[in-house]
Image 1 (cartoon, rainbow, N blue to C red):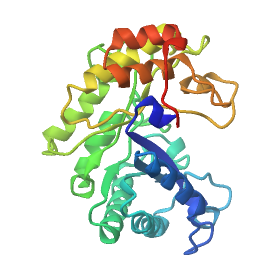
Image 2 (tube, helix red, strand yellow):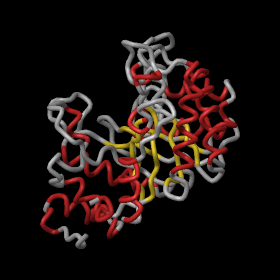
Image 3 (cartoon, rainbow, N blue to C red):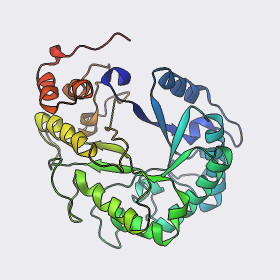
Length: 318
């Protein structure tokens, strides 16, 4: 269904704990299944790596908790992953949203520590496969104030990463672009979370001499849950997403935009369900139809019409 939608790239999550359930003992069976199927469909796979196995973290901690003493273990896994999937996976994302305490194991976000983790993972990946592209983690767009323990501003976190020397340890920066309740064309503003906030992160990259590096959007979207304060109406979700794709097409530094999320395996019964393009039983939602039509025609108005009447959408047979 991803291929039929017209998307050339998938961003897939490969938990460390699943592939290395015991130290040094790798189990690639499920990861191979996912990657090989995607490759057979002609899709490029970008792999996000994190999720700490039980053996690599203290008792009572979350799967996001990684002591610095265990950074070499994670780096070794990154190298093993890069080596095993050489020729099938050509880009890795190292960790996820480390500017949130939740994603940093409940600890205050630490850009210098994340930079040290990134440096070790980068070295291991390049030693295993010099052609692999290593992306620094997408940062959560947040308006956190200085000193907050739960989160750190994405803009401040990236600046601090550069101050810690991160620039020489990644080939590109993953971006997370969520629109909240704002249209896709709403201008960037440090005091607002909107889709174009990623332009402010790009400005930081350019200012630090990294203008030649790509910055793909590996998560993006709007939510249309009827009772979430940051959600939009279903029609606006479609219009804003298509407008975002039009804008990204004008950014030569952004090679692709991945919409979060394709499908969840089971419902959460919360607003989180309304990020999906498919129901858990694989029934397409209107945005899926719109994206399929947009991929086929490049015409946002026509794609919006298909979303309003999905029967107008014809997909090739698998």
